[in-house]
Length: 164
Image 1: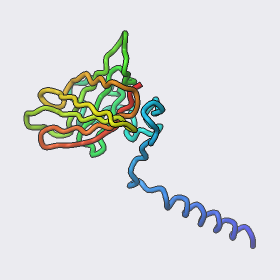
Image 2: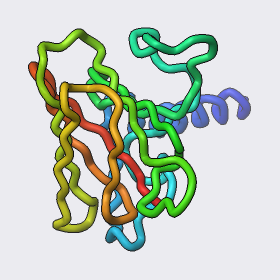
Image 3: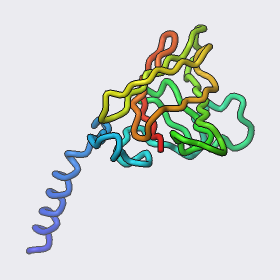
């Protein structure tokens, strides 16, 4: 009978295709120069901007619905709650590039140091948030995908942020 053979062929092909897609694969990073970098997260910049509720551990100080744009660190140790999304290089009017950094665990005192590198270039920037994760204004000089290494006492995490 021909139908079971086609079903088996379809199933074998489908399983072969799915074998190459695993949850453990690293995020794909764009290799475009900064001038051609994607304008939105999810189009080559590795850290997606979520718009649902903040993780439960990051909701202190929020009342009601905690849904807002945010980016989770690759290791899950920090979240950046983004006010004034999307982030922008130039804001002549309106909200600033305010990011509230929230660490998963209570931290010893110390600053949050952000080492940022612009994908496809040699451009790097360093920002410091006094007192550790907390409210900040993080302005960066060029649009594109910025790879961030965030370091604070006892912790390091990474994420990508897109600036338009």
